Image (cartoon, rainbow, N blue to C red; front, side, top):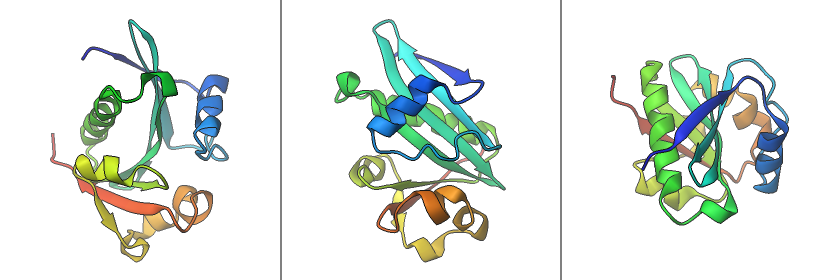
Length: 146
């Protein structure tokens, strides 16, 4: 499937609106170390996703496919793109927190971990320590070097 990914120079209002509509955190989007991308194709907007580099690891931030485009495999395509981007940054592993997409990420090779297993730098991130509820599933996937 052909789509394009455009890095957003700053968190745009359409990104913020999409994340808020999906119930995802937006309080720290302007802080350093976060990169957000808009995904689209000939049919229009697919969604958004972000990466936050934390030492040797990357935290997937706020991946969302807009309602009208769900159910066609686009989420898997966006996730694969984010994984490739993280591997290109020499990330050893990908982490994420989710309140509603645990099964989706498990289908794509992520493992649920106890929050106590988080590396100290990940545990200290605002996403982990303050923005996501304690009930959010903490997940991990090891990346192969590229």
